[in-house]
Every structure is written in C-alpha cells, then in structure tokens.
Image (cartoon, rainbow, N blue to C red; front, top):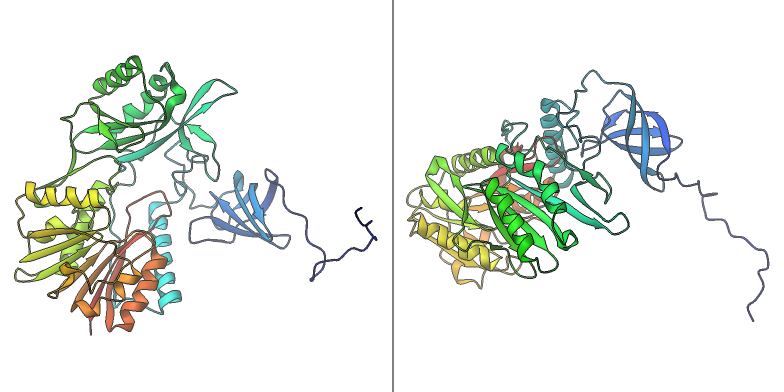
Length: 450
C-alpha cells in the first residue's frame, strides 16, 4: 500500500520557478543587438529573446518557437517599428522557409556579421588575430546554389503529398514555387516538381528529392519502396522535358536511370573537370568555389619543386589545381568511394603526379606510408568538427605552410590555438561568402612556421 502524501512541499533553491513561455504566444519587445547567427536579441521580463528576422533598433511582435529556462526562441510575427537597414526579402517564402535567415539584411551587413563572428571566435577561443585580414570573398547574392534537397512527406490524414523546404525551427514543409537562391537551370524544375510527384501512382514511396546542376542538371529521387514502371516513366519524361538526368536511390547508393549518364563540374580557370555522383560532397556555390581555389593557391604559393599534402581532399577540388603546380601531390580522404573518384578525376585530367589514399584522419599519421618523406605545405578542408587530431601532428610532417579552409569558425579557432602552440603564426585570414542570405560562415586561414 502506497504511503499517503504528508503534505510537505519542497521549493527549489533560488525561489519559485517562473512559468514557462508557451509556444505560439505573441509578445512585443525591442531588439538591442544581433547574435552571431543573425538573430535579433531582446530582453523582456527577465528573459533573453533570440528572434529570427529581427534587426537592432526595431520594435517587433514575436511569436514563440520554444523556451528553455530564461531563453526564448522566436520569430518575427509583425514589425511595429522597422530599422532603416531593413530591406524587402527577394523571396516570398523567406519569412517562413528555413533555408535563408538573412534576406531582410543588406548584403554588406551580412558580410560584417560573418567577419565579426570569425574574429570573435579566434579571439575568444585562441586569443589570436591574423597579421592581415583579407577582404571577404564574395559572389552573387542570389542564383548561386547548384544543389538543393527538397523535402517530401505523405500526409496520411489528408491523403496528399507535401513538397517543399522545411520551415524554420520546425518539421513543417513549406510549399515552394520558386527559390531565388537556386541557379537558373534548376528554377523550372523546382517549380514543376510538386505536380509530377503528386501524379505518381504511389507518391507515398518518395522519401526526398535532390536537385543538382553542373555539366548537366540532375534529379535524384530517393524512394522507400519500389517504383512502378508507370511511375518511372513519368519521372523520366519529366526529366527529359527539363533536359535533366534522372537518378534513383533505394537502399543502395544512387544510380543513374540511364547507365551512361555522368555528372561533373568544371574548374574552368584550370581547364579541369571533376566527375561526381549524387551523395558526394560538392561545394554549392560555383563562382565562390572557383574564387576560393584561386585564393588558396595564391596564399599557399606552391612551388614547382615542392611536395604538398591535401587532407580531406574529397573529389580533388583543391588537389587537382595544386597538382598542376607542384612536383608531387599527396591527397587523403576518409570516404573510399570519393578517393576512387578523385583518383579517376586526376587520371582523366592527365595529372600523374597526384596520388590519392583512403585513411581515417582521426588516427595517428606516423604509421601511414603516405605521410612519410616530408611536405613543404599542407592544405586542410575538414568537415564541421574540424581537424584537431591532424593539426596536433602537423609539425612532425615538416610542413612550413598550412592553409586551413573551414566551415565552422569555432573548430577553426580551436585548431588554430593548437597550430600556434606548435610554432605556427596566423599570417592571414578571411571569410568566404559561400552561402549568401544565411548566417553560415566559411573561412580561410594561412599559417606559417616561425
């Protein structure tokens, strides 16, 4: 028999707990400054509010998306008093779509925000600042994205297929008729795609769809059940009408509907072509990618008699242009399929001095055969979690110059502190505006051995 409650109540230390702010509630407040991710910060009733779509100096009405203790996450519901810096969004879906969070902010202010974020991370986490700040590397504000993932979900209750992009801070799918950040060849595809998917005999079999633009346009359909011959014919007819390749993915890797189909992208300044398949990592912004490779070569200054190492090489985006300039290029990647395609890309472009290896770069390099013999320079392009285990071993490789390309300023700063401890100085750094209209920051940093 359970013991009856004796009526005692214990109050948490620090007094009574404030009631939580309910999701969906609207609240008026002023915005004082920007967070590093571009959200406006306001303060009200002892809480700190982070508001999507708000600018400093504005009076707004916010709608609560979530609350944790004294932190409230929200989005702008209504502008009561607008900042003079605010501009109209280029996309009608910008206020609700989760893809672009800064369209209301002038591009120059977006760049300043990203520059400040990089500088703060280097200063706070590594107590570093470069000897020279490089100008931001920029491209077009719109029409730059050559790859996109389209969310698809079958609504069992409504017996309909939702097609579009995920909403900000939500699993809701926003129907998208156009997307101004996509490259032009993908615009008619994304506009007509929802209709053809809804006309399928078994639309609930579609998991998601990805769009690609390179040497050709391509549509990858991820399906969770076998597609009928009729549905395959519909999809192929749709792709043919839009001069695009059809790729399919069930449980295995993506496969072209027509076996002879190939995808590639060019690095035109170096007369190079790199083949890839859906699922491989490819930079989404072609103009900025070419400018990034050119800047990397300029900063790293590889010489004709040097042996250079490229880690996290992917398909050879940096490795192939580097190989054109040096005696020997050693490139390493963790994904075996991409190593195979990188080697094929080098052979196809006539680069016999580039050698590719598959390795887990979280392991010690001293035991790897490819790490022997010393290198004059090193290029790093790691994923978001950085390359801490690698940079701990850089000095042992004999490297004099390190070029670090980063998609996460926090891990770049952390790894920079380790490089500094090994005797490298931060000579130059700058941001790469790979994703305009978003708060995503890419950066490049050059380190030189003392």
